[in-house]
Length: 143
Image (cartoon, rainbow, N blue to C red; front, side):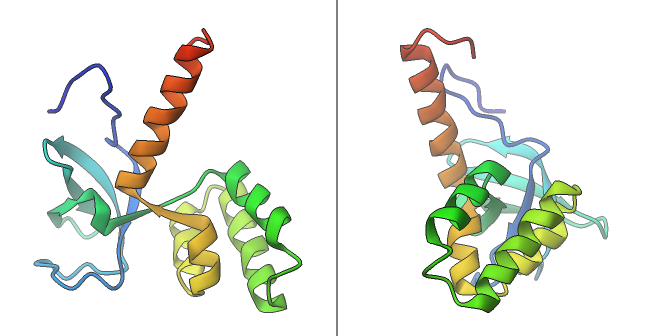
């Protein structure tokens, strides 16, 4: 397992294999699973509900942004959204609020606009978490 000062764990995180992934040896595009192992070079092992597991690069896996981030993005962009995308945004937020993240992911990817605002790759999530950690450390906040 990877360990260093700036290590951010993905273990246990819910992810979705990118539906447009061109090479997927176990054919799980668009399916959700949990990260069970994390290796060097941005590779993780994902376990799926059917008992299968596979190794993926973190840039091939999607995660939901935080609920607060999604709400902020919705509020900032609601005037520019088509009504159907606004409704879908609200549906994603509602599903997240009742702890239905896998369903929220499925809904979010059904619209490129909503996917753009609601989802990010696992490697982008790690980068954001490192930045948050650095900011909190620089401000003297507990981590």
